[in-house]
Length: 162
Image 1 (spheres, helix red, strand yellow):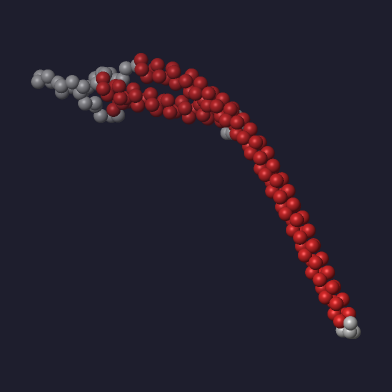
Image 2 (cartoon, rainbow, N blue to C red; image 1 turned 90 degrees about the horizontal axis):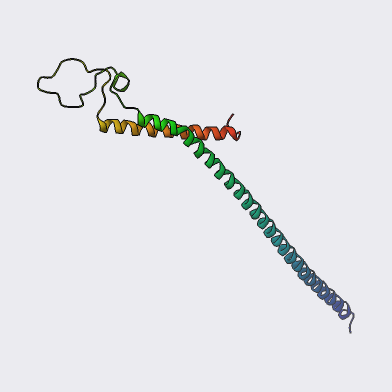
């Protein structure tokens, strides 16, 4: 071989060794990266699964607490509304200044031809259909107010409202 051939073979061998080493390191690095990536994905999946289980337990606890709160609200509501309901249903509705203001109410029945020009008496009964509607309205308003008070009482009991 010539003088140039020996160093050229050495250089080619060195280049081949460098390329082979670089490819080997690259392959080794890729395997390490893939293994690390797979481990990170598995670790993240395990953490997510644990978080889902924890959140599911918290949701179940919260749901049970809400069911108990709703039962308390309903119970307090019934306790409060029952006497009001009885009072509204048993009392008759009278026409008077509290119901009609300062003006006299319209007559409940047609007046006879002989009629009277006197003012309406202050305590006469209203028509049955009007009384029914007034009672229903009063009852609905009282039930809504009782529901609000019951909710507010539960919120105070649980420390959510000062």
